[in-house]
Length: 507
Image (cartoon, rainbow, N blue to C red):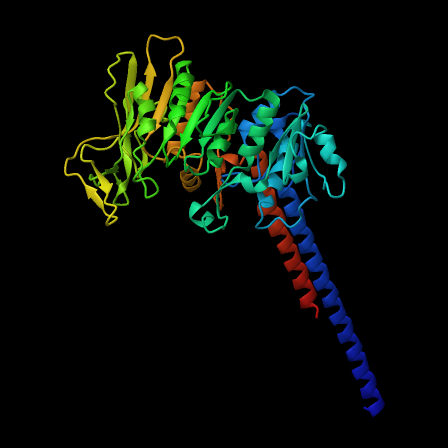
């Protein structure tokens, strides 16, 4: 064969090889595009909400046990009860967030979209940045009552009234991180905050609670959230020599105080309670108040045959101790309060003072124990010279909480006194969440005093829970999931495999 023929044959072979390489390249690109389309289709299906004949027929596919991005049946049912012409306007005072990961908006933006989807047109969500459109502030608040110029986050607006919600406030946080300025979320209360706002704007607040401030107490943000979810508005009132209880006060709260009240407060509070007032007092025994015996507060409480002792309960029964800690223990619920405790026989207790009767000799005062230690408990006090706890050798049962009311009067006062903060403090709620048995007790106690309606109460949702809740797998979801996972995706791979095989065998 001539040199010329060899060159021609090599050239022909090269052309054929180039054509085959080109075909394989084209096929590879096509296969990638097909798989990409399948993946996108699956994501679209999983994010789909199909509107049907009723609100219950919406299909959602947030199947996590805690439903982070889906509103609960409680919210859906309440929205259904609202008149058809109800318009709840949720306005984000910002550009719509797009980078949601690891921000509070990761939980708010998707959930608010679900409010719109299930509301039947009663809820709308929009994002309007007041820097670009300053008229939105006047539109929402024409009289400048709510100071929206400094607002951040969302405004829930209905019937000419509004409630501001900052996404940062839609979580409980680990208090050990907060003391160093770090926000480490422990639970998600986004739905609780927004549904409470919707309920309170459409129904109005039923009651008003006041927190007494200025006595060395901690924060009460989480307790405020719980009250709002029960349609109870709240505000602060400052302790002072000119202290008066506001006329609209339905519940007075001393939460975690470390200093005693003033002389003038005794008569003001006694007068308030004489008209059927309600009060909750919660203190503990800790390094911030070991020298405070609350003589003036005890003078007030003696009117209701109650007294707070200046000592620390030490639980000596290992069966009651939590993690072998004598200062953190379980306490028994008195039988009269089992229903308020949600059926729980025991609750948590930490660094508690004993609550006792004050030996006030009036038979119309009815005092009841609420929570008791084991019969092996003792008490101790801090030796300020050494910092050690000096424990009393006597062992008996102590009350951690007591309740007092009057008989024979049409408007009796009601007083709850706790020697522990495990029922009211932000630290406890952040650590254990709104679904904890102690917090359920607090909510039920308040409801029993005020006849507050918490039928639309939305519980908090634990974070980082990726387990599946099989009860959310309805027939529609099962059908679509089965079709996608068992049929479409395997069939796509089979088709790709067959085509690849046919192409390769002819090479």
